[in-house]
Image (tube, rainbow, N blue to C red):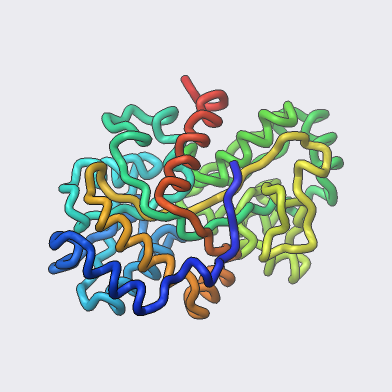
Length: 321
């Protein structure tokens, strides 16, 4: 499960090229948008998904002069919100902003839409690996120590999770699968409360973003063991990949992306893609991502679709019922 990072200035067209391209677009795309756009965030207010959806929405509003409304539709790990996107009119006025757990929904919930067929990927906006944190109360300071202790004491170590479809839970489940250890899940409605319980020593460990935990490491309140990706995390560049610390084949990257209902006109998909890509090059956008421990991700709608297809295959072997 990998993602491409970095932004190439050569991919941003000049004003003249953009003007020529607009002139060649069908009338439907040239007139878009003519009214407010709704972005469905399949999580509650204040979540990272919600924050990033509003960041993108504000940029669209500023550029196009049409209001963008972010509608929070939580529940069932995001499956309810994604269902509303899949059922919406394919006219570009209802979009979805989804996290990577989109690709586990078919294996955890009874859904009546096909993630690969009933949604139109637009662009992955941001992503990063996660960090494996452990409470200082455990006395564990390395991945090797953590794994040895967990193997010797099945179920004794606890991990914070925001539900079975959350990235924190998926990373922990994959870690258990790859290491053969057994940990006990402690669910939270909001993961930041779980992080605080790890800081306090009430929970043993958590997999979460660099932005949500590295300050506690700097304040000597948490221990960071490794990162879930195969490349350095911009928010924790000193940490090694868990795959290099004794867990061969372990890789988990969190991402966030913009989607639309299937059959949304390609011209509208391209307009949205190009505008979000333009946003991703602005210092304000990049600063907002950096504060969350994320990086911009570049890629076409086809690249995004390929990631979804690959991750659906990967998770089917771990989570299929």
